[in-house]
Length: 583
Ligand code: 5AD
Ligand code: SF4
Image (cartoon, rainbow, N blue to C red):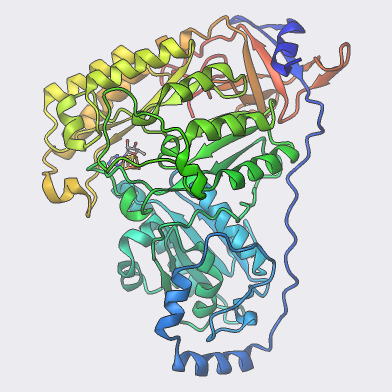
């Protein structure tokens, strides 16, 4: 029997509240919920530091050769994972590449890809003998995983660096010097500008250079700045199992592809994260299987363009049946052929564990062939929730953005998705005040928000980014106050419409995956429904559907039926329904 059917058959009303009635029923799954095991560190060998540095300095003076840089630039993606640091560059010894129990403090900014990158970076450092700390004062190495998508995101990092500067200068001489690193998109975009502007930054590692972190930190130990911002055509970190940081986590992110070839005219991502490349299906399935064995109940497939997924890693995949673009959509790049596509991956991933929910983000509207939509409709554990970034409601602006579709094609796709997947939750991204956006264009976006009634929305004011096509070819001509006024208007309309859209959940029974205690009240639990809306409900004893008669308290990772949800009166948060709130 499918577990979801089992819950529905056994539901029972447990509480009636003043606003409306809510009932729960717990689905405790057969497998014990086990926490994610931590990985063992290799035993670090402490060194007689003085002698090592002298030797190290003399070898550095003779320096690495050109060949050394070529070699580290082309680390094969399928390196076997090993707790040993193998084959070090000839100017560094294996010892120097070890972390010597230095404590690393990692801080993540920006999108979910950065959260996943943090886990990858940590996995690599852990294998090199570094320890992790969540206490900044205790850290020997501070690494910021950064975002460049908008100016404000970068400003936050500059401000943080100023704070860290004083931490570094006040460091006691009795301790090893504090090392500071910038990882990810900002390292890639600004490169040596960061090293020149902030002398206190010791290392820079772009999104494709995390394997090089032990070497970069080893060089930094000598007091020199070190950088690797090489982008790769094939790095997917396929063999690096990210280390889950929260032992009680019920869900995990699994990176399936990196980079982006779309070249939307406003976007810095193709420049900071490089060309689009997909991780081999087999390694994704292996990671999802491990997560299922660890008791995780939700996996989100991650990538800049998840649904453009195309695994070409084996020759025979090139004969795979090709899938089409969504009707009325085009690409900025030459058509790609063959490979295992997203529908295949989604099918395989969702078969691993029927109790495990599957989500994906962030897709591009151009890659929603019927195969993908049918699969979402048919498979119980693939969430009926689609993020469909529109960016604008004006065809004229969409063309300037080089999105590859018109408003009409986008709206047609929305209708097609709603017909194919009844009850689907929709979310979107919008940019207010893009180059040349007129008041009429803006009103077109307002009308798209009214027409579609998204459940969740992410709205931004346009932020001009150097290197992009818009920077070179268009004029950032909308005054800041106009951008912000338009953004406010979009947010207001979005909230009004989302409130209407989310009303459809009132009185409905929703299957909620429990995440843990609610932040608002210790007496409540918090979880998410299929549409990814937050649901808060009382932490009381309820019937266990898998063991009739047994009354238990729900735990993180349990599925609970929440019946007759009510909508919050908080109009600033239209997804808040009896505890349903926006991401
Ligand atoms: N300015 C404002 N928003 C942007 N986004 C991407 N680039 C910019 C920019 N230069 C938004 C888009 C994208 C989301 C991740 O960030 O809406 O979908
Ligand atoms: Fe940026 Fe467009 Fe690629 Fe999304 S699809 S990452 S907006 S270039």
